[in-house]
Length: 438
Image 1 (cartoon, one colour):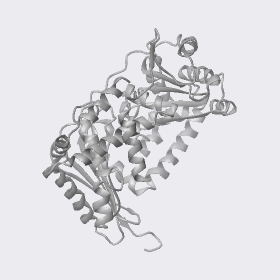
Image 2: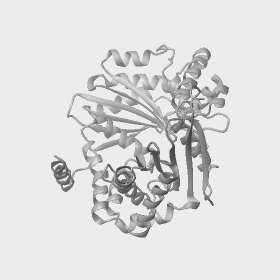
Image 3: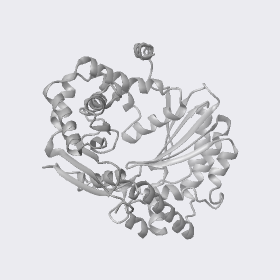
Image 4: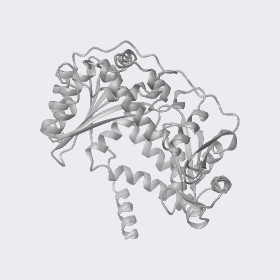
């Protein structure tokens, strides 16, 4: 079975497949960019609207604005009341949702292609007509604060992640969490949210991606009719914060009620499309591309030091980010031994480049994930939108070309360049006993 899967992936990679269907690009007079992908495999379509605003666009003392605003976007306009948006989509057989990241916020719907006009009308309405009732604002703020408690403050590993990020970044707003700090959330008022909305939710700061069983000419006319008269906003203040070079290791120790010790390590690295980003991506796969990759094979399977261990290069960010290593110690094992085992695997690659087979396998994994995602109109649109947020959807071609050029020597070079002690921030979760045990 494993051999058959390998053969199928190998054959796919021999076929000269375009990594995306043809993209029709339009730009309205108010600077709204529209990208349309025609795909008639199924009678479905997805509508996505991307806003160039995330937690990186917030200020000290008001973290969490972008994520809370995402919640408020479902709270109604004069034409459509609170929660009416999702109910209308669901009544028409569709699904909808949204998410906020450090760099952008995205809203989407998936429904029968002959109903996608509903998305256009509804999204145009809430781009400019959000009510943001003060009582709804306070209520939703409480919802987000509770979400923060459950996802971060009650989760030791996520708490450690926040601490590591805050230590690794001293200047850049990547240092604070997307959901915001609890004290900041408690201080957000309706006026703060409304100003954020009016600053960033405008056609000149948005990109629409439509994919599926549609005709581009028909859809762009509907979009012009609904969005074309919305005026652009004044120019946004560019983000100028740049993280300074780290000049020594930073360490975090977090004591929390937990079952097992856990370690999270971050190294500062450039983001795509920096020339080193391709080799860093392949390095991540060589170390952590499945159970046959180096970290699992050595630290989990052979040495049995950890329940799991992984590496992750997060290169698809607007600004330089981090290359992560993480592991949970196995019962009875010392987290110091786990940490040293992670560093030992890094040193192996620094001393000797990975084999050609390892690198080719990692490159195949990256490319196969692109090829095998083409059956989903949602993933097609997601990729187009993601790369558009990074500087242009055409960068998708540059990304795979860069991956294909990576050599074993490139992988060794970036490991030497970035994975060093002075450039790392290490966080260790130290379990404490629960109250009942005390």
